[in-house]
Length: 440
Image (cartoon, rainbow, N blue to C red; front, side):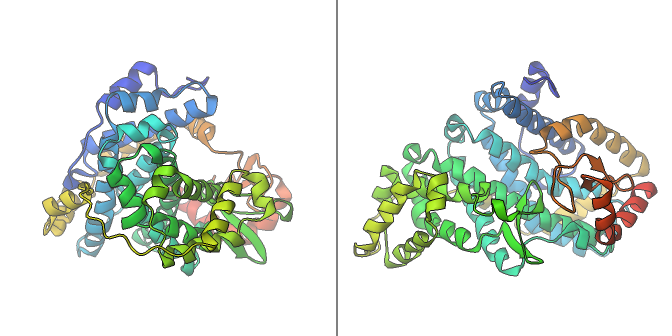
């Protein structure tokens, strides 16, 4: 592993072996919290290994011990908890948490798992080791990307600095909304890695991607709406590394990482022999795909030369007639995790919420202190800075930053002058944040 080690090889093996699925009512419990901490350690070590180019021991362990299906099931379970239990929990009359961090950890669990899967799925053998749960993962990614397209018409995720610091639960719900946006972007990367394996996927998975969900058309909509880009104050901004960053005019023609993921996924789904043989180019699909021609500029082709083949495919498509919908009788597998979890817990959402209110989300002060100490050991500052995707950026001018706001420790600046200029905006968030930290 790299120079900075969070886990020794033997420790990583023990943690991977111990991964298991939890029932919805167990989320936030002691055993669940321990697994969440273990997942975070595996997550950070996997990023350290990938950054240091020292091999991928975490990914190899997940494959060796057959734990990818476990991670997929846990991912979908926490997604269901957020949709079915969390809203009920918030509506309970006696739900007035003094500290929302235990709930935040459950909400954050989905982000932890999808981040680990994103790192692992870079390797094709991981896709194969997912076995039948690849169908469930494709459905999961489709749900997230559909929400991403829908959200693009409503201004994207909230800015943390725009927060008015209301009740703790209001703050938690805002954080959950921002987290959901970032999770969807991770799901896009996972889906792209799945399409890298399109020629070896099962017929059921291909049918799910191309017929049931029509992913090529959904990806076209993502390119059209580009929910990770926006205009703010006359300046182009893109969402990268967990925040909106201004893109300088000299860099605006540069392909963003997320746009690149969409183009590569489209290339895989439209030009792969296996996929082309099974994708029905109806009049709707044909019309949607031909929209891509407007995006295929010389500048884009210089950055992704392989897209010249896609350009040729679209030129041919423009000259051909649309295909009628296929009516073949196909026996195929269907995803079962979401349906099974919903069947097992149907009618129990309120009972689960009440159980967790009494036994999970109302910890004593001593229990909170003990848990806080464990979280501090897990989220070591030296490791967090090492796994950061890039050098921090100045909150005012977007240059590389080395100085952090001493009051709240949240914002970074390249110089004192930028910090002073940014204070009018940052001060609204900085003072309450600092007061909140002292209160804790």
